[in-house]
Length: 387
Image 1 (cartoon, rainbow, N blue to C red):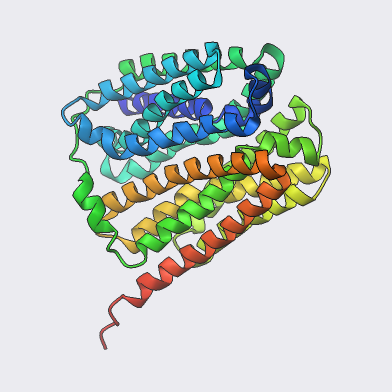
Image 2: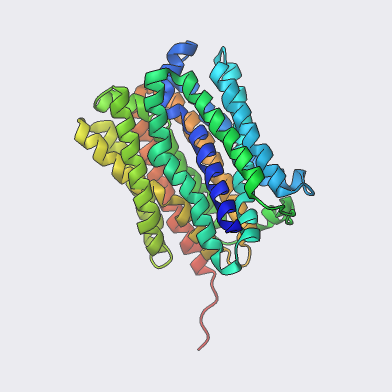
């Protein structure tokens, strides 16, 4: 019973942090108008979060090697509440982006510690199922939390939406404090181990593939709101519907593609980024509400499987160095958010959503090529089977 309460608390932490991280894409137009800035500049609020999440994911555990992980998780959830509160009252975009830097510390730290905590509260043969519960918070936030935030933003304003997000993160901090047991620190991977893992055949190429593929997604997803306004219906209700369709697709992709990833990895590492690229092209060039919803579902299916695909890819390339390889992959994922949302914002401001989406699609194709190449490089170095 205790582990169920702890997993439920981690689910709430995941849900609240993901909601906070990805509220801006659905509220971008209203935020930009209120703060008298462009949507592209405001998209940097996503980049800022990912930037500090990258650093936090790799280095926070080493920076605080003796701190009880329960206390650290509680502090991170509280930090997210502080960040959302500052965003809600931010007088300008500079203060807002500064607050989003704080959120990145919370997000990166949470995900770097989640597996450690789960491994201490559930049996060894149930760790996968335990992480499934934690990751479900991400899926539920995508399916329901972020679209609901868009609707609340339309009714009450974007500042009230972030105020509610702050309250949710504060609640998560309280629940984590009450439900989690004390969790002693585990040894981190360290910078030396991270440097050595880049010598694994194919891994460096594949990490570039992750940056290109995931970056393509965020170059489009961060600016989905202005793209929807051009392609279909500009209303808040329709934007929320498209985000919901994306979330439903992500939930399906997480489950369905997750089942077949191990067996069909070489195919899936190509299919997933190519599907994201195709969705970007379709949303950029096609028009109509039905098309936008269908594209969102397909796009969601592809992106919803990305974390499972990356995990399987890490295990395939570096089975004896999973921890540092996974840290490198997590860092690449966060770097992709930074690059994708920043370059996507530059593209939206300079050439508009259509041109920006087409360039992002090209990056998705490049990501597929690099990921397939990484597996080929790893396979080429495998010892020949004994005869």
